Amino acid sequence: MDQIEGARAEGKVIKLIGSRDGSATVSPKAIPAIHPLNVAGTFNAISFDTHPAGEVTLVGKGAGGPETASSVVRDLIEVRKSFAR
Image (tube, rainbow, N blue to C red; front, side):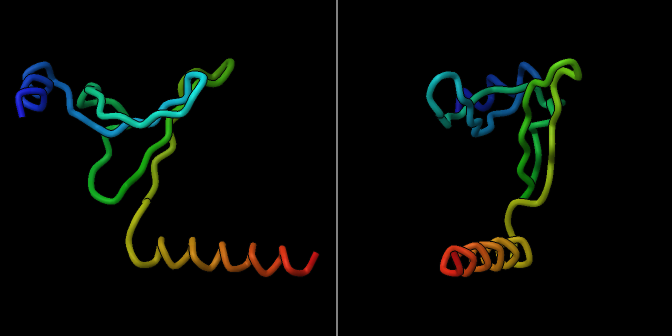
């Protein structure tokens, strides 16, 4: 709880952040409260650096009934395609 309160005092929030610097990791990190990765509810975000545009962040729904159903249907289509080969 001290880390959360400390982050809040600094204008930051704690979020689970996945990163890939050689190997992939996911860990809690303090990020500025105004950072685009600070999404709420069922939203997910991904941020990456591009050249020459700089940092690009994509945000979208990541959970919920319709979103999960869409993923399941997509997976089933891919499984079906794999048997057709």
